[in-house]
Length: 152
Image (cartoon, rainbow, N blue to C red; front, side, top):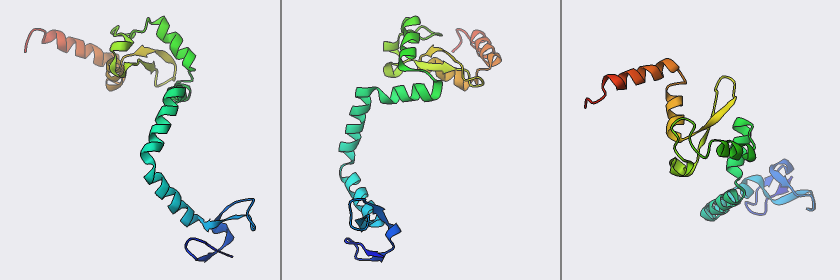
């Protein structure tokens, strides 16, 4: 048993975080008090912490690299090679990366096999997703637009 120096409650040693250089191998404050202190500090410094995290991720291109690897099995170098191969343009509509929403092209992949196909602008990627890659829906859309071409 041990008394917390913050709340003055006597608690089991298992209710204290470990600290190997302490007398009994635990911290002076119980887990509840320590978590409250950490939470208060987090709230007090939340904007600073968020900015620091964003700056680090941008500097290291971390988020992009992580998502490419986890979702598609691609290294950043593989993505950049695809981008160069496509001349920095959407594989469907030809929109240049600089003109695309968010200034990036998205990795298109087969949802059944997971195989990476090519890079698309957000609009083309969105259309494929909405139509669930069903070619008959695409044909129906084309027929509809041709039927109503010129009519408002």
